[in-house]
Length: 139
Image 1 (cartoon, rainbow, N blue to C red):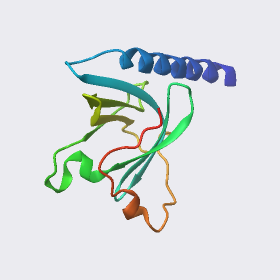
Image 2 (spheres, rainbow, N blue to C red):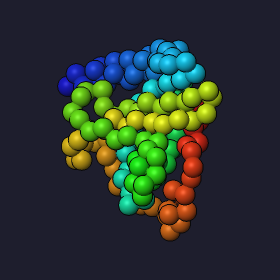
Image 3 (cartoon, helix red, strand yellow):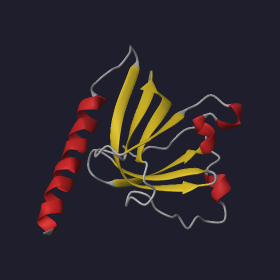
């Protein structure tokens, strides 16, 4: 019975890693570079989202995305949140322009009871952790 669920999950992971590598080679506009990353878990917080994602080697990494990046507080948006039920969700696309971080798009499951959503026992200095200007990626 478990094999029935394990094989599609393994196929999805391998597909996402392959898509990430293929997208990494695709330029949408001159100077624009895009990569896709599979997301293991999304932890919402009143200051933003903590994202656990996998790089091309399958290693897990942590990314903090402040709410201010979504254009709140009148700032220019550096992030978009797209909710849905697509089987490929959750994943994220990251965009660089001329080697500098431009913006990212988070594609997450709309059902907050989905296993990809979690509850983060945030540290006391969580507000300071989200006081960042650009993401720190472990590629």
